[in-house]
Length: 224
Image (cartoon, rainbow, N blue to C red; front, side, top):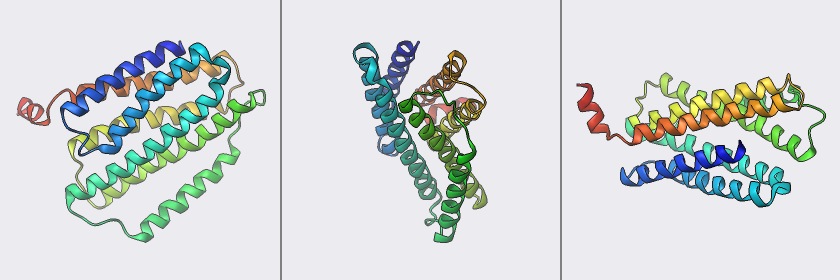
């Protein structure tokens, strides 16, 4: 199942990269483009690790989710800048950024109440704790970005909105999976629930492929 998911995600990533290059979207969304390059490379590396270095998969998984999170945060920052440039407004005030930082710290502190199964292997325990942290911060960051843009009445470019929609759906599912994990013991059901997040990301990739396969001009003409 893991191998099948990795191969499917790698194929979808490759298709999306071809579209990003053909549509020249890498110029306006370079962080998103590099994120997809990372996803494709990590998917291929994951396949190799599963096939030949299974004992090292826990360490690879921790490295993979950390890289994913860093690139996703970079994409969120990029989306914020794209929205600001599109509306020709300046960067938000420092007081707003300080408020967001304090909110993030509060949410991180709340993670201390989240539990994990006691029988998890130590590398998996660390990886799941990091994933809890990333899930909360990513969802909170996207909500903050949407809230700030709505508060200031900012309009979103279509491509940026499509990327944010896909990320928002995936962040929501991943956070829900993490919350459900706090009420489970480690076993078949615990692992199976992770597949829900993986399948949701495949759906997001399919959505992005569909969106970038159509020119913005062609889509506007079709709706008129």
